Amino acid sequence: MLSLFLAACGGNSEGDSEGSGDSGETDTEQGSGDSGEEGASGQEYEEQTWRFITEETEGQVQYVYAQEFAKRISEKTDGAITIEPYEYGGLGSETDQVAALQDGAVEMAVMSPGFTGNMVKEGQIFALHFLFPESVEQTQEILNTSEALNTDLKAKYEEHGITPLAFWTEGATAWSSNDGLQEPSDFDGFKMRIQESPLMQESYKAYGASPQALSWSELYTALDRGTVDGQENPVFFIYDASFHEVQDTVTISNHNNYVAMTTVNTDWYNGLPEHVQKLIDETTQEMQDWIFKEQERQNSEYLEEMKNDTENPTEVIELTEEQRAEFKELALPVRDYYREEISTVNGEILDKLVEEIKAVTGE
Image 1: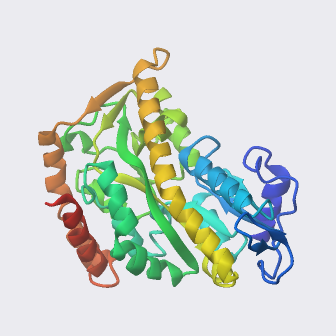
Image 2: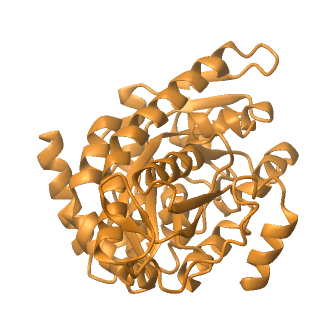
Image 3: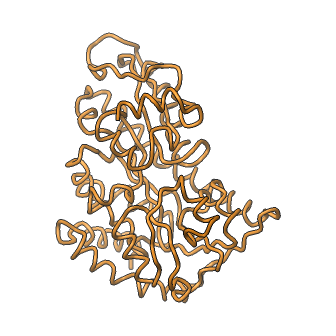
């Protein structure tokens, strides 16, 4: 992992554009001691550098999140603490990045639970279709307040050296394809790209699809060559990653939300002085409203660009409530699969989350 990190710092000018210059080594005392710069709050902070990896590239939601987080920490500490954001690819694949956080090669990461599904079984809960409400606003409220996620699921990640500090949505997911996905029969034999998650496999098998796990770095080429027939992502990502260039249609299905986690290496975080932990926690909470507005802006603007793109025309299909109901009927039994085959606590986290969702939606 150290070799991977050094190679990325020395040889990847694109993925490491924000992280060049400093060696990236973090003080082994992790900010302890009384010497250092005095931040805006009057608290002293020892000079140090933290690495913050993301699964997206410059300009995309996760990356601008890391940039804004870094800016706020720098301002609050008068430049004593520097955070270096890394684009996707700067430290390997999504699974490489998870390992880097676990091993302490980096301190912070934005990651998708789907790429940790084989490690933290309960984290596959986000792959359940039609679990969260259609309203993205309500979904974010649930992510902010859920005890099932922010206490129970968090503890499951900490068993593996990863502490989730917050969960947030990057927007409702949509389907891209060349066929125009509108009803379950459209998925018969459809080669659907998914993340490495058994529950994602089961979710799409329920529609009759043939799911295939694939890193997003390979996805454009796979779509272009027909290795896979389609994929799911928020609209901003579909357009910014240029998937619309090799896919003729995008279906606004609102079958799920793309959930991201702000995470830290557990041992590193627990070893920080209390005032530095408080700094991170407060900034994380501040960012919840900021990132919701940012994803909303990007998804809205890119949807309009997609609709008006005459060079790569894309048919945008919006499912009716009746069409969504057909998919939901097939998706609901997958919750039993989660309880019986995936969950290590007999579905207790899911059951609690369902009740929390009902409390927010009133359904």
